[in-house]
Image (cartoon, rainbow, N blue to C red; front, side, top):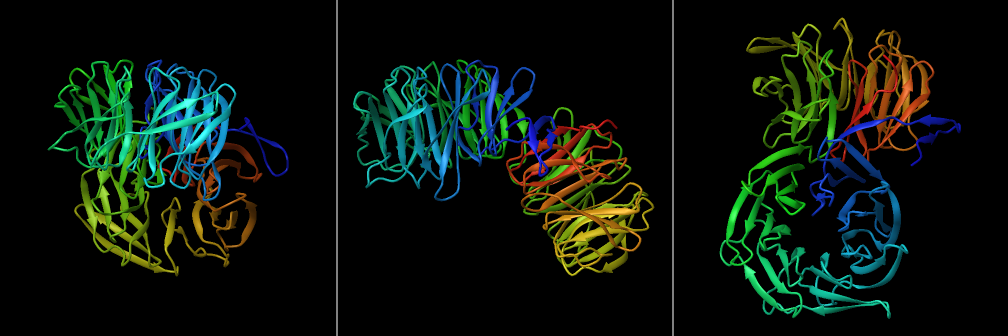
Length: 611
């Protein structure tokens, strides 16, 4: 993508500077990698590959995929990275080979349908082998230098199940292994005849679904992690099963990831969050560490004195081989992030919420400071009280919960706040009252006392779910948006998603599913003007800058747009989200814009205008 974007009237719009991304897709098996230079972590988030420096934490982004990344591989020399993606039924899924030193696309390869399941580089950077997903189920060998396919073949025999993993030998550019559901093959590349020839490995009576393959450094044996929670050790030369372990105490919830060490020992990552070091000779577990979420990646740094583990709870850990102690180095949401709020007059931290939890982050470092979870409950909205002494939150069980921002302890609860779920919430400036909106379309005002509360007022203007509440500075008036028209309004044919007061409070602006941004007169509810907010999909999030000169929007178009309020023109565009944007917020001191999206990402952009 060029650094300028063409808008409808062919003028160029400058791009926003992306400063940091909070997010990691832990559901991609072996998606977390360490670059051979030992300086960078490589991992996917949505359709972006993120390179994160291990020395200073700085991030760089490789944009080029059109949909979610499904696999990542790094060549032995470190010169290339390859990533594959998923796409829609009937379309071809891209493989991109990236030139790591240049941070550019070396080649875009298209053959597989719907999904690329796995990728592996040959030891001397000559070839890339790719495996298609279950709708494709073919293996293709590519010449990296010529950027073309050499040959391909169905991945498994007609009688066998789908193939799930491929791995290249460590010494030869002509030998690789494929494995999956009831299939285990060693392939040899016959370059002169442009063919790949498979040999079935003999496993006797053993029927297994292999999820990952790792070949020992000397190429004598390879290891296969299975969904049954055991590891097969197979001789690469004779293609015979050597052993299957552990015999009794299997790894719980399957073996998702394997790494072999110089010593011959094997690191095993299992679905129950256990990372175990097993002896290469007698397969006894020497050490283990329990992590949060199922382990999906184990990546060695250098020889393996240090290794990194990624889990499906979107956490990345750093572990040391010597003491086997884990250190949590990155956390992120593992489901769609629904919204973001800043506390009053402070830009140092902000809160985000997803269906599972509420999290408070340090803006500058992206460090998670606090996590609030209510088991089996979904959070719909969050706000900070103006004095900064409490976080108020709306939940799907019809309760309003109040937490302390330092420790996250529950300091108050309003039961049955709404008959259906509580869907929107705001605190008044005097910190005495809470205004809440519900799934049944009611707006309620609660007086808060130390240790108790009282319902002061109920307003029923809406016929449908309240999505957003904004209060006027004198707390005398509020404006609410819902999935059908607004309270003081003309009937507009849209589901409103967001609403904001202009700081001078004589106008409000709304956005919603009709892709329009509408300015309204507060006094009589008349429409002042309408802007085309996005080319495709609804506008889900909107926020006005503190002085009212600019506002930001984001939506299904996946672009963050900064607008001039009076001109109604886009001044900057931010490209970086790979899921629909759910909310946007400008921090109180006009330094950053924070945007959140449905793929679990939280992005921090530099605010482009001087405050």
